[in-house]
Image (cartoon, rainbow, N blue to C red; front, side, top):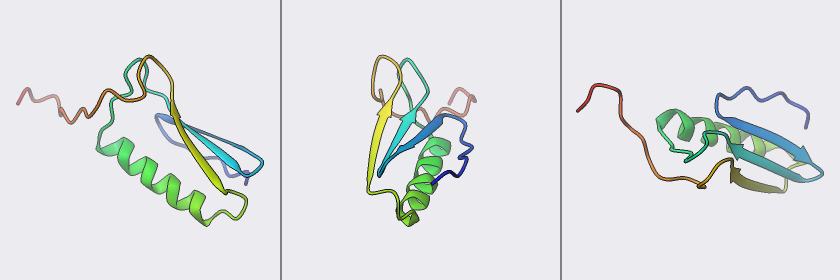
Length: 76
């Protein structure tokens, strides 16, 4: 698999049969609707890829994920 995945806060590296998916929102890697959608789309693509047998989900920074950030900036 050599498809170039274009995601805002996710990096993908394939080595052999293993896909390393890394969330890149350090230091706390908060998730939101956009990140969840990108991960779901990516995992569906990897599931269809015969050369991918394992997916490792990792993240940069201090915490794997400190939780959700669904703030739209409105202050409510």
